[in-house]
Image 1: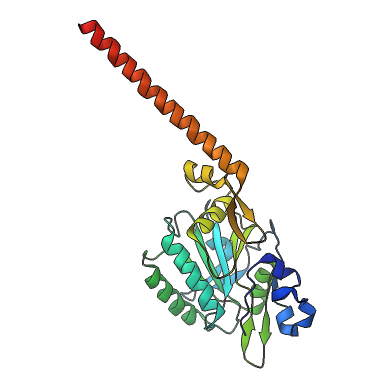
Image 2: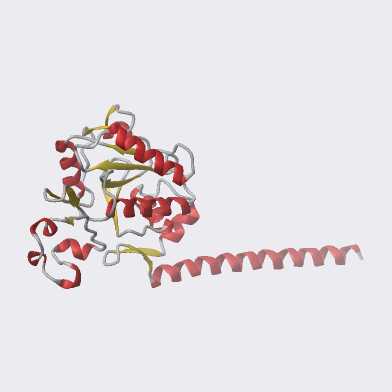
Length: 268
């Protein structure tokens, strides 16, 4: 029963193939993403950590680093596994480490799941990631907290009582260090470049090297594709920077050669 929406257009009332969402089963039509950019997440919301400790989002979202947020549930063997595995693959290729330049928070949308299940899930993903005990929080909570967080980020999902499963979109949300919604990336493939660019944007440039920020300026987030793509003006601007650098380097080389020639002449 899990359902993936891979692009924002599908979150605007269209089923795959352009069929109106009204023609879909009711529980499927309710599944979508309403982008709430700049919405402030309620930092007082309380969840249970994988250790069983009761924590607030405020206690987790500390410092000047952004947050990669996913909403899944841990007993889902279809879309949730695909999505979290995709996040995992993107993180493996990323030269950043969760807990240093960013953090990850995964929240279960099933209020019946407990910290022990979250702990088991977290352990398996950290082992597969093979980067140590990084800051990837796996949380569980009551329905009120889950609903509040989901509504803030615009994550609409549905529970099918017949199968006991949730239908939900596949999307990763990015929060600013202050807990404001900054970006969404859709689908079940998350490239390291897209993850890094979204994190740099979400932190308003507070993370990332000067070179990475310069490269980001040559890409633009494509809402129809749900990822970053190069645009002509940015590429031209980057080309201009490299041209100026190359000309400056050439000038230094010629200047040093000229000095060397003068030195040789004075010695003869």
